[in-house]
Length: 248
Image (cartoon, rainbow, N blue to C red):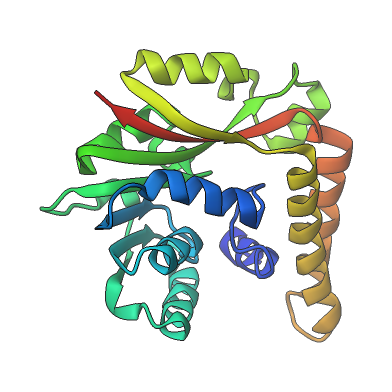
């Protein structure tokens, strides 16, 4: 079973593919979309379009564009858009986010938990700036080290120590790059736990409900492995911050 399929199944009950509660998502979008009554939002790595769909639900005069390489996730995004009645206000592109172009700028550019697409946080912000309208906002979510990572944590994440910094250094780097944080949310331990248990539990339940599926055993093994890597590896070590940013 490929990674995109595993992720898609695992996030069926937690469409926001990050350790954020519904309340946190709503609060961040309220800050990122305000005070504009209308505008355009771009998600560079939209997956199932969960952020964009919530933005369109909150702002009936906004339009949105999502870009992702997972065709099946985009199909789910289209289905959700139709169910919500916002399909005419969203465009979804099966494309590498690094290749996306648009003649018109966007009032909001998002990248939540997908900065790896551009090679890190600062390259992601550089890409976002190319699409951003004057006075616009960027909503970006990135990992950071809550504490010094152990060898077990790094192994579980398949990461290197230099892949992340602590929270203060992460924010300092963003500010030094010319961005001003105007709002932020640091995911709580409870949000992390809810997210990880939802992710592994949903994948495992799919496997249990489809025992004859050729990928059932692989899905269950993937759920068991991820749960062990989280509980015995990076729980309490990897943090997640979502920033609302503006430029002068």
